[in-house]
Image 1: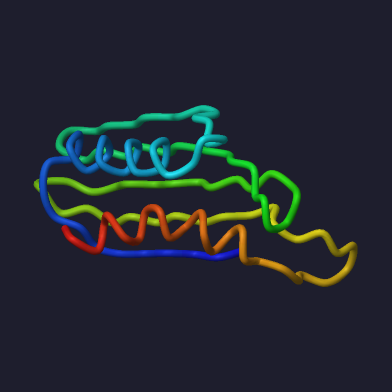
Image 2: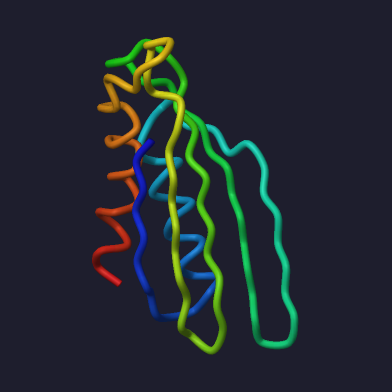
Length: 110
């Protein structure tokens, strides 16, 4: 498991679109699995789940992305999972970290 968290500022829909495009354009095997949205007044929250094939690990890696907040101030959390092949220990997280980097590189500019 790898995790990236950052406070971001700007338009909610534009930030979400930027993240989505970064993930989908970051890998030929990336897929958008599902999403959930919630709003209450000015508060908005979006949860998205993506998957992609990890060539390094020879398996699929998932990434959950949550963007929540209001008035141009949002908190982003992205967590990857599934990149290890070991039964009891977590080894070979290269695929997870690489998947997470597709978001970290783009969001770092916000």
